[in-house]
Length: 510
Ligand code: AHR
Image 1 (spheres, rainbow, N blue to C red):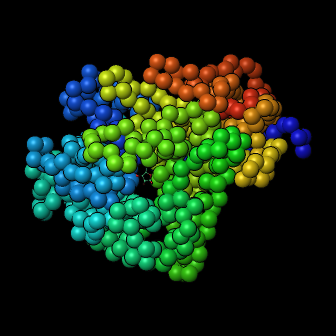
Image 2: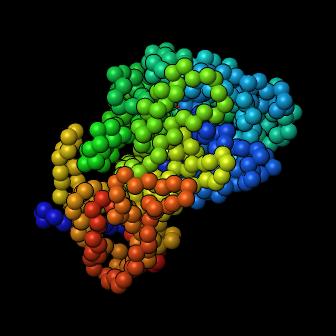
Image 3: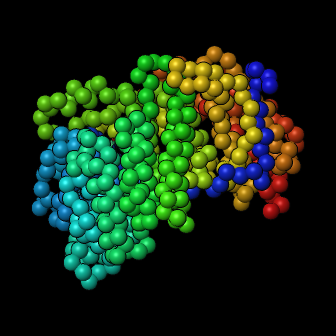
């Protein structure tokens, strides 16, 4: 193989699977300024009658997030959902133990469901299995999904919400393996609780889908025994197991940082293997699906947050987890999105954690506007163009070794075919920090094709960021030029994110 060139061959019949639209989900927690002065700020010039910021809604909509996980995160493990419903004046202020903040409960289930409707997303609800349990989870489900004529559904109706919210996806707690979690449990304790909660919840609504908590990261000392043990108890009672992982460049080693999608891939493959072990052991016919319902880059704000959390007075919406993302982070996010796509056969849901202000693609200024961080762009493009059939590319690429990873391909890519639209989209990252990468794409299996769009993020300093007034890091459209029916050649600049969109002939005949 040429040491300096990469190539991919794509064929519409070589398929990895369908990308479930829920792969492009996100997450809003009652944390820092995600809710208060994030999505909700009555009195802000752009706020609507319900107090939701229209400037934020306008930035969320192009992301096309199909589902948003809520209300936590660590927050949910001591949350009383009842505090956030009913007449606003009667809602208590509570101490939020997870983030040492004051929770005013101005936004609760009904307000958040209304906001989800405004941005066109489904609500994905997490229940408190930290300080509470089966009874509370059932009460919340009855409140949200039961049509009426029972205690909690009538309570919802008395709160002015006649139609049920019809919440389809429910997370059975959050990161219950983590010692930091309020109500942390052993795998045995959690496995039993998840099983019994799931069974009771399905009595109320048999149409729901349930997610059991997997490990909080692949570095947890209990991983992957945690998965094996909890599935022993709840395999037949849940539809998904969750994965959480955040990525970081703590040692300022860009080559190693850019290789971390290999860690995501191996985490997914290991969880799949544990699920399949549980399936075999139980002689089950069911295949467990994966919900990667917390993933992102998170490290820029860690030191500041530690200092803030220690002894800080209990305050409302403190600025927490406000990572300012760089160009390098956007490239890493691109490789992570590609990895999720390439595992679409088993990863059916994923949530970029989070959406606004706290480790988020969207930032707000309480006294001014909202803006897009660098990571907004690859997420938006994959969400917009990555729906359809993920193809299995035959890929050749030169490789490198970094501090923690071996045989890292310089080229990371995924291709998605939208047969109905007759379009093929190639997402590609060149991880090389010092060399452009010539790429040959063999598209002969598609008959004729035309390159219709070519977007690129390249040429920025690795540490370049966006601000409220400057959108320096954003995709630029390149001229498409001539294309023919054979191989397609592209030059992927060093450290670049590329989106190439083709109109393909073979699908037009379908
Ligand atoms: O997303 C921030 C936090 O990260 C979440 O609250 C928790 O689930 C995870 O540890």
